[in-house]
Amino acid sequence: METSKNLIKLLYRLGDNTLIYGQRLAEWCSNGPTLEEDVALTNISLDNFGQTRAIYSHLAEIENKGKTEDDYAFRRNERQFYNALIVERPNGHFGDTIARGFLFDAFQLHFYQELTKSNNEFLAGLAAKSLKEVQYHVRHSGEWVVRLGDGTDESKEKIQKSINDMWEFTGDMFATDSAIDKLTEEGVAPNYNLVKEKWTKTVEEVLYRATLKKPEDCYMQKGSLSGLHSEFLGHLLGDMQYLQRAYPDSEW
Amino acid sequence: MKESSQIKLSKDEIWAILDTIPDPEVPAISIVELGVVRKVTIEEDTVSIYITPTYSGCPATERFKQDIRDFLKINGILEVNIIMQYSPAWTTNWLTDEAKEKLREYGIAPPIDGTEDKGFLFQSGPKVVPCVKCNSENTDLSSQFGSTACKALYKCIDCLEPFEYFKCI
Image (tube, rainbow over all chains, first blue to last red; front, side, top):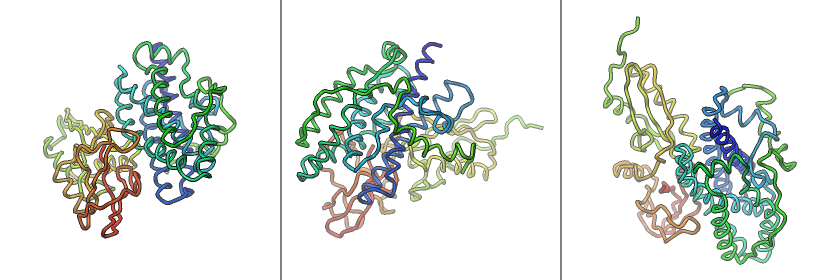
């Protein structure tokens, strides 16, 4: 019973991460700087929505309250979301999106890599599947960080600023609470310290290749695991949930 | 009155029917050839079909489900239980050589075996994807992401043909 309560918290965290990240990327649809980038960002968005659906369906089974995927996505308020703060950051300019994307994609890569070892069959399967997709995501964002960093003076200055601005939201990706800590002890959730170690190595490698500086350690924003968010999440939900709020239960 | 067994078809016959359902996004191959149908079981009055998505968010998955229901209905199976199975994760290794040839004829470069990139960040080595039109190996990756989740965009430098490549995962 206790384990399933903890597992529910972890599933909210994972599903909310991919949902909100997917929604942010979907905002690029028809607004990409080039057609190829428009297609790339929305493809990554789609992969994230797909992962979300798998997670929410499983969550619905475990919670066993007759909820559907849509209930989780469209009928919760911001304080009931547990996504990491970084994914709700606004898109900004293309470099901001790439900086946010790279820092989060690299987290997902190492998180899922560790999650494949979970003794929970669903989580291990989800991780193995998602990992194949995330490898493409991180290559996309990582190559852009290098191209912009090692590009013109202007692109370098801009991407360095984007990375710097995003930095204070990276600590929260690795946040845990008592529920998740318990799952880690039981071998269900990965060891977040290990994920952070691997993530740091990847980030350093890419920033080095991009001739960029790793930001100084700074105060890290926190609170997402208690449902505390920045002002941006409410606006995102307003957009995303409008239809279901205005016309409950409407279907295509 | 309910008959004891309403399923008049064998498992093999059901597989054969499924093999006539085209992939909605790449109609040159069937959903069986694509490898998304993983298992068929018949228990008493229930036919269960286990399917797996190619990519988590592949919109064609919904279409697979509807097509399976429709095709089986025509063949007298009114009720079918479709189960989504995420593990083991779909891989392009499940495409048969025959299916790959069909892809090429259709104008999509098939996945090249063993080219799953091991280095996740930067491509581990140069990958040659021959042009589907002129077979030249002088081609260039335009984008890792294409018109559907499973494809990348390439262009041929010799004949200038832009074409899609079925990504290896």
